[in-house]
Image (cartoon, rainbow, N blue to C red; front, side):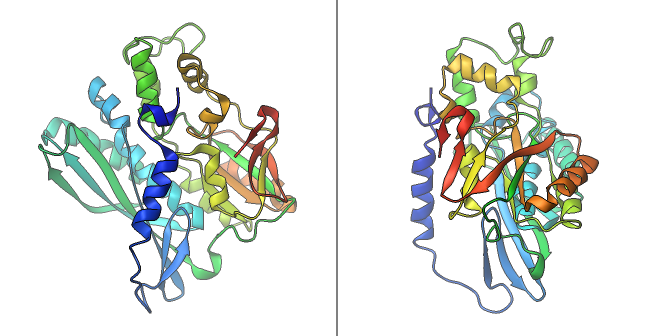
Length: 338
């Protein structure tokens, strides 16, 4: 199975995005002038850049609805945004959410609110508003998305342009699938004749149901990354989301990211790969495969980077590779090139 034949074609999405961007030309001058960006957009605001990014939870919400467990989905919504904002070195400060739903039942919205509150606490942000739209003729179920506001001194922006050969790549473990690739995940479960309420087969998560593991909230990396940026000069920061390792060249297209010692994929990825008979390349360009965030740093600051990240994080942190001359991403141990 592939992500494309399950219904989501990444390359087609990329072309669609180019189509949107080709028609958008207007730009403000002065305060509000665009300053570029990769995972998040930046605008001029005096000595600071204001940072904006937006994202949603995706079809993970369908699993939550089937299990009638909505209390963690809000964490995913905030995580997918704040983890993008910190990629330019910015501190997230505020958030607004958008809930599109066919039937706004309080028993659902209250549970969604619990997750949003938890995500806000973990990110140290304020939720300052939002919008709930009842769209019974458009939406079947609900969709939850949001927008994050962050800020960074212009002198402290991390763009990725400083990345150079011999820099070190450090990986931070994910909490699981996070919030990407769920269209493929759901197809795998469906075609395997399994239910989200089924227990995992022997060797995978003893005593846990498939749905419990699939709803594991997205890891939030705000605390460890912001503390890291106080101590080192990061050359690049990447949130590993939909597209997997193909996210890395967004930082710099003129070098090659060589992943020599990848973080071990969680059992859920091995389970999905086996059930769906999926090739390694498809897995690594669809899912995070156990690595939710990366830091690119000079070799001399690598040890300090790992110490600081471990001090503020509960997830595994280790050196996973180096930067070399070339382009794209390579995982030599798996024979993969992107």
